[in-house]
Image 1: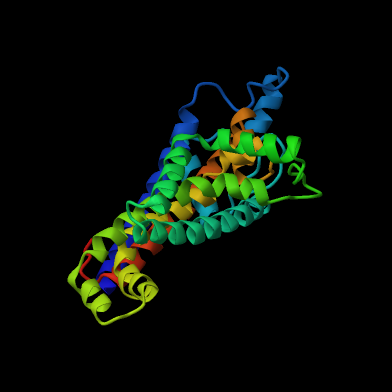
Image 2: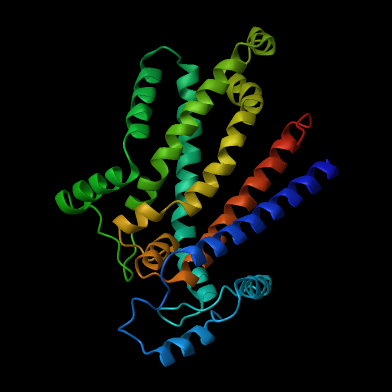
Length: 302
């Protein structure tokens, strides 16, 4: 177990370093410069700006300096606003984290319950209704779902208000972000439960006269949870880092919204900072899910 953990941690650190290197050199390979969009700065002003943001030095030297700053938790300064990237990331990520946590809870609770229900009533009307809804959900893009929810519940029915900084309403963004992973959890749960419920020990449990809910949730679900855990790790990372579209539709000032603004404004330091931060979250959660997977099934090897 210890050897597996050390290998996975080493692989995670190597992956993060590769992401940092690719992001840094890719941003510097983009044609043009970060100050080309300014109002025709003079060569003297442009030189001052290049020196201020450490862009006048050779690229390898810039990369080493950038790595040193990252180790201190310093993502640099925004080229467009002059604000600390670290401060921007931490402030905006709190919003994305709140929406993401609520969406993860909704997706897990409803996904597991509906998945187990579909397995328990396989080939009957509850199963057909649930699977039909999941098929519709996975075939519709998230921005379409978000737009429909906003149109119906905000503009037509006026049950909830549109998101605002002074009056944040998490209901519609959370639902928009949760429905797609919820549909996948339903499908994974149903498939795994059907595989497990055909095993001999499930027949034995039923033969002993145990209640059906005990057979499903106490005996079948634990062994059926291994494939689900495999998906839940990347799902959590995807929900926490993949709210770019949802935040743009609802104009939420989260990390995804900041990332889009960075691309629009050609704010290279903001793009690099948010990309590396989001990649670090994905790598960390994937690492934790792999370690949990190993704890549930010790037979797993790297």
